[in-house]
View 1: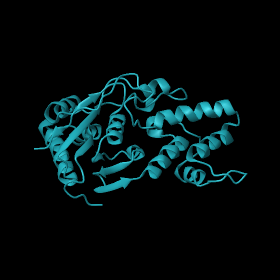
View 2 (view 1 turned 30 degrees about the horizontal axis):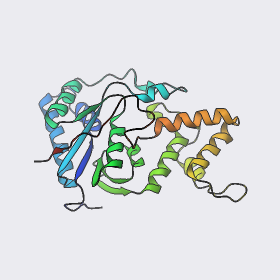
View 3 (view 1 turned 30 degrees about the vertical axis):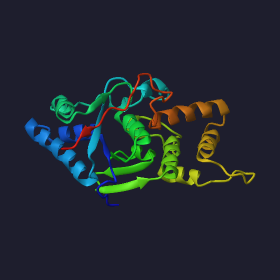
View 4 (view 1 turned 90 degrees about the vertical axis):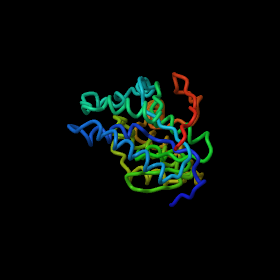
Length: 252
């Protein structure tokens, strides 16, 4: 899909991805080279999306998901990860030179989801597949791909991820349910009485089939759903800190 001038007003940028990419790429290198990589990523996004303004987000302190996770510590598999040497300097550069916003209590993904769900003519710019839960335009700069995700596709991904969990974030889901099995579960659109099952119904039924106990199944289902679900509204019931959509910065 190719964008024309006027299709996009605001680019919503996952600056977390930029930070980690520039930091690892220039590990052991001059930090000025990392700054240039960051500049190039922003300029590339502006060129492809033809946006007139942008909002970039970085994940800050705290995370409501850490309070929700009971089965396993949320992102506990990353606790011993050593950050690259220029990480803090690049983060400061992204904040100060590119006016990106640090969000506390939530993740950058949630901020992006809220903005796209409540603003007109936006495009989420990220390589994170989780953000495809959000209806609207998406730009994946790894693939060089612009695509539109409709509401049906977005909802299906939410429940697919609820079934699978996410090993990269230490989220369990239903054990041994991977991509193919999750797709098969969500394709079983009728129950034994021939009634149509919605994605939420299909997902919960799969948890019941695995855990057998109704209370335990719902508990595990709700935990996973609340961990994988990307926020869409500022009054999301999981938020413990207030979040407001910031004013965009203009592209010059």
